[in-house]
Amino acid sequence: MKFFIDTANLDQIREAQDLGILDGVTTNPSLMAKEGIQGEQNILGHYVTICNIVTGDVSAEVISTDFEGMIREGEKLAGLHPRIVVKVPVTREGIKAIRHFSGLNIRTNCTLIFSVGQALLAAKAGATYVSPFIGRLDDISVDGVGLVRQIVEMYQYYQFDTQVIGASIRHSMHILQCAEAGADVVTCPLQSILGLLDHPLTTAGLQKFLSDYKKLNG
Ligand code: G3P
Image (cartoon, rainbow, N blue to C red):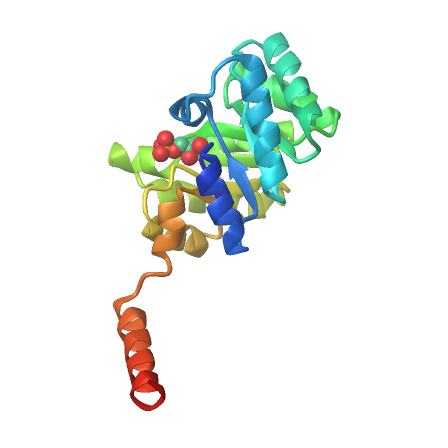
């Protein structure tokens, strides 16, 4: 399973990259706004900066809602760096845009996926990735990880190449559940990744090893 970090924060991206386990970055307009990145040139520049920090794919989302706008924006984003993946919402216009990008070998991440039907159309249009939003479904009492599992099974059944990203991850348990469900990728906040390391027996065990060592070696 690949690990992406879901942020536009450069410090967190560097920290995750330093861990040596990072496979990519996903952003969205809300995450860019959270970092105060505004104006087209600054936004494009920020994506290039991220690409220069990490070695994996970097999802950059279009903000246009019409086909022509998505195409114009997506082609510009894709031209920024070979590892940019154009993130497109799963709307009518978005599906048409994904088909267009697929014909140009521009990779896409189809976002805001909340149903198997949406994931089916995205895969048929040639999406590289789909992003089902786990946390937001859980928030309305729908099983988010269950959706990931259904999409993974459906893609296996029809042998689609589209990769499933478990997105809208809220905690470390979501990551483990995505691994069980067979997600190809999880995109997570840094804290959820680091949370996988926490275990009281590891902390206590390490303390004991170090204190035993110090008893004899000072
Ligand atoms: O990047 C898309 C997704 O991961 C957003 O997550 O926490 O805003 O629901 P969240």
